[in-house]
Every structure is written in C-alpha cells, then in structure tokens.
Length: 285
Image (cartoon, rainbow, N blue to C red; front, top):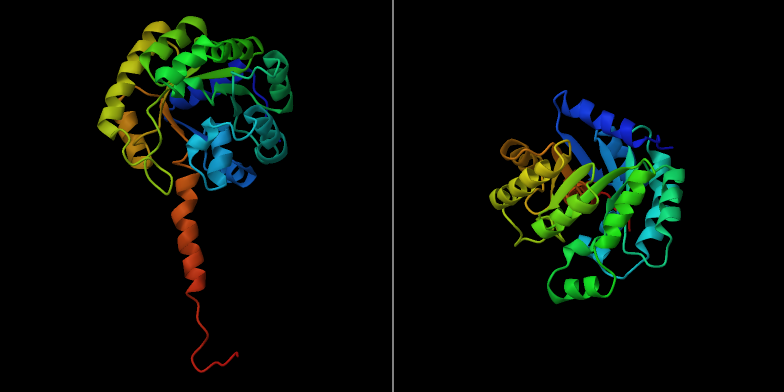
C-alpha cells in the first residue's frame, strides 16, 4: 500500500531530489500495472487522473473533460482498489474536480487522505475552457474559484497541492487565492500517437510560453516547484529540451508515459507473435 506523506515530508523528498541535482518526473497512472512499473522506473510523483483511466481504455485525454463519468468517484475507487495497493514508496496525488456541487469537498478530501493520497491537483479543470462557455461557467457559479477553494482545503489538511493554469489570467488568480506547492503551465494536448493532437504548440513555442509563466510564478512564490507539461513534450528528448531551455524543476507526463509507452510496442509485439509459422512440411489440418 502507498506510503502516506505529510505536506512537509513530501516537499522535503522533492527538494532533496532537485538538489542532487536531478529533475523531477511526475506521471499519471491509469491502473495498477502502470503504477507498479512506473514506480520501478524511479519517478518522483504518481498522479491518478480520469484522463489516465480513459487513455487506458483507448480514448483521448479530452474524454476526461466531458460528462462521461463521475470524476471524483472514479479517482477514489481507482486509487483505493487499483493504484494505491501497488505502490510502495512514491507519493501519490489525486486529480480532483474542484467544481463538484454534489460533494462536501472537505469530507471528500479527508476521505482521499484516509485511503492514502498525499496530495491533490486541480484536474479536471475549467481552466481548459475559454470563450463564451468559460464565461458562462464562471457567471453561473461553476467556475475556477471552486478549484482554488479545493486547493486551500487540501493545504489545511496538510496535503501537497498542485495547480494547473492554461493562461496568465488563471495563473494570477491561482497565486492570488491559492498559491500551490507545485505549479504547472499546461501547454495543451500532447502530440503524437493514436490520439495526440498533431497541430499543438512546437517545443520552442512551448518553452517560450512556459518561461513567461515560470517567471511570473516565482515573483508570487519564490519557493514554488515548476513542472513542464503537454504539447510537444512527448519524449525524453523534448523533456530534456524543457529542462535545458527553461527554469522548470522537471516534467509532468500523461500521454507521454502511459499511452505512448504501450501503443507501438503492444502493436509490434502482437504482430511478432502473429508472424510465427508452422515448420516446413508440417500438416495440421
């Protein structure tokens, strides 16, 4: 069963790695076998997200932003039944839908902590939406403010907090109302593979935008940990690019670790098995 960490112990563990010096790697895990072997690979933070679940069912990450399943129930059950029992030492965090009018968020986060989660992340998030739909969500009481309140509740419960923003306006709100322990500028859907978005930002543009967010974040909270995510960050080479060309402390991986690790290798392994042949001269019919 996953080891439980206080917020302070969690942060100490991360800063120890950064000062080694080694960049941090945070990944998603959509099921138990992914969690087991990702941990063996030495990553620093394991996240349980609805996107991970949908990716493991063969769908794109944006399925996690649609009203397909109850995110918070899903994350509780996947954690309790599948992921947390397979993890030994790595801290595990939950992707929480802060905009959930059907739950008492205080009680829900207490339940997550009780079963073994050591932190939270505001995902799925209304920060992904823009335009008239986003304005309507905000105007009708279903906006980003609920995610910020969720982050503050988690901090009061001594859980590590991770904050997403997709633009500078939301980043300003995040740091003004609920400054997180870890900040991630989400650069967009990850490129590549069967359900990636091929027209997303290139790595240079991603790095430029990320630098702007990191500079702002440091003015608001100098000790914040900064991770890069999304868009062109799809492999170790682009992860290295982000660590080299920005001030991030590491990377967060979703599709880049789960989906892309199995799509082609699984297809090739199946094809290799199908390539076996009867020996010459054998008759089995």
